[in-house]
Length: 303
Image (cartoon, rainbow, N blue to C red; front, side, top):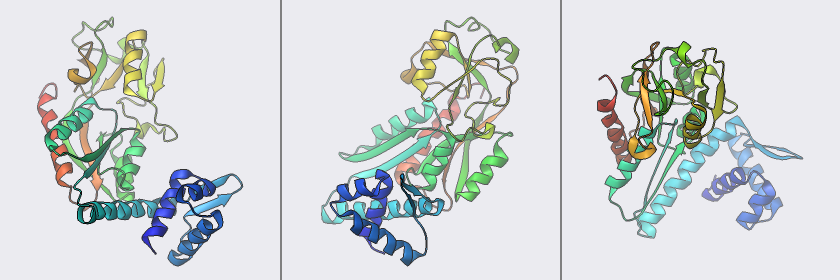
């Protein structure tokens, strides 16, 4: 197994096509196919499934590619630091759609104080958060557990070699815009919300109730709208007098002051935390980011 073979496999996976990967790598398609065959035979594992419609990565191949990416990234860091004499650092986070997770990332970047760096933050689905940490795309994944989803998520964490670290707990709040008809209430009951659309983040093909980002995922909503990003949800709140359920932690510096949270009468506790690879120590950047996340414990309403 060589570093070149690993780079070949990663390029094929990224391109989704043997022909496109061959063009990007400036090698012939037969040579690339032979390299795949040789590596698969050496490790006794099928990385790609071939068909007339292209290639598909096998589940075993996904795991292999996760390790391959880690190896090539580490080699790149070694080469940059000791051969090219560069000190650019990399750090990546995947998170459910939390403004406080984004704001903590902003503060982390501000405190790093480096001339060169390559950071990334991905607001994405629950399953993508888990897979991103498993496959080394992100060092940290921010999400929540509660009594309803804990068993399912704990099983997923164990199967993917991850561990969950709890940061703080919070109650359930109704998140809506300041012009909403219910905006003046001190507490809101679920029945009072029935006339208004409920907003939820689309979880894609992984649409299990247990992977929902919102509390009360099994409630029989009369009106439900799913979207993919936070900006769209905020626009829908204003345009349709819609709402969503959240932790109660909002960041006016990012979303503005036109939105507010009101306690939900049928509140349930959310345990906000993060997942990381089991047994792996966080990098200094990871530790710095977690410290920024912990700062939000003091902003939990009611604490």
